[in-house]
Image 1 (tube, one colour):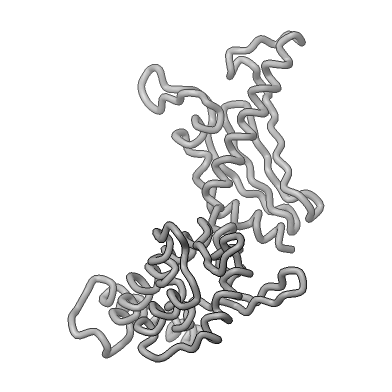
Image 2: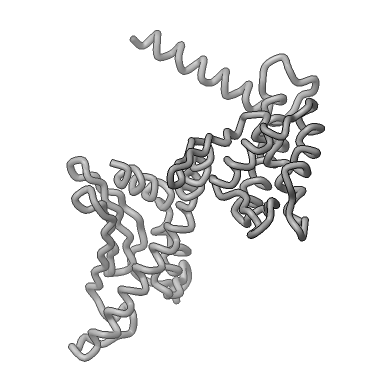
Amino acid sequence: MSGRVFFEEVIRENLDIGRPDQVQLIFDRKIVRRGPRATPGRFRTRVITEGVYPSLHVDYKATRIKQYHKEGQALRTETTINNTRDFQIGKRLQNLPALREVGFRANRRLLDVQRISHDCSIGEDGFHAIQHPRKVDDQRAPAIRFEDERAQALLHALVLFRLQPDGFSNADLRMHLEPLRNKDVSPGAVTYDLRRLRLHGLIQRIPRTRRYEVTEQGLRYALFLTRAYDRLLRPGLAVVLPDQAATESTLRSSFRHLEAAMTQYVEQAQLAS
């Protein structure tokens, strides 16, 4: 089921891949749109839903790429070249290796484009990885929840410690957490936080010491999640929530128009019924 959801998302992200400017990237062929030297042929994307199994079709002249989720288990990509002259290749059997290479390269470019456009699924997995408890060997790591004030304070502190050449200790982390949380923090609470940061892979212990260092993964989590919370979520909600913002803004106005349009749509649907 998750594989099909993935493929349907891939289709949505790549509906415009049949446009000439996109197709020429897939097939590595220059396409001229207009004038006497315009490239002949058909360039398009089709989504076919036969039964309940969708498939994605990309056309370049007489060549077609078909992609579908085969037997609910794997993403299958098939390329059919019906006219070798589209790629300045002869029709003799000895040209088969060159023709196969054209097809393989087109498939790889298509998958590269889709991978780049669908990296959001990787990001979603990464986000949920720290949002849920984790078990490492026999140790259980509690979740580091994005909206939790304590977790945000920890992530802010990690950004500071990334530049420390000799790492940081329990006391160092405690010293920075107290002003961030505006309260006293016990050494035991910091030990608990160090443990869950370590088990989630955001920090690692420096060998033969009681000090820690921030991992590359930990830095990226800390930088992105703290900035998303401080610069996007909090100020954004302050703007769009009704009767909260003191001044008018484009975002606030757009939300008001959206709300009015949704209300109108619901009223019309009720009248129609």
